[in-house]
Length: 75
Image 1 (spheres, rainbow, N blue to C red):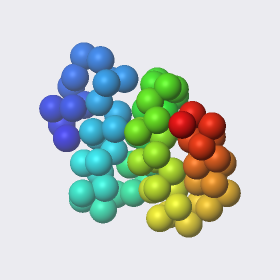
Image 2 (tube, one colour):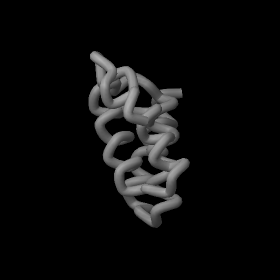
Image 3 (cartoon, rainbow, N blue to C red):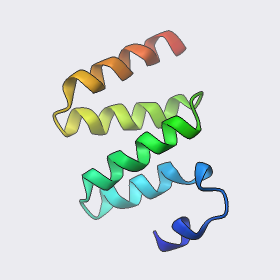
């Protein structure tokens, strides 16, 4: 995880940092990094999908639903 934090272009690694935080059980930091990832890469549907799944898993159903709905229109 520390190597990702040192990466020169953070926009490219927010999703990887989020997955690392999920692996260690820190869902709050994972959500923060997925949010940053979706803001930095607004056209990346995969990051949005992973973020929406974690929002749902974290019982943030309304935010997850909004993001899933947005993804329907992307497809």
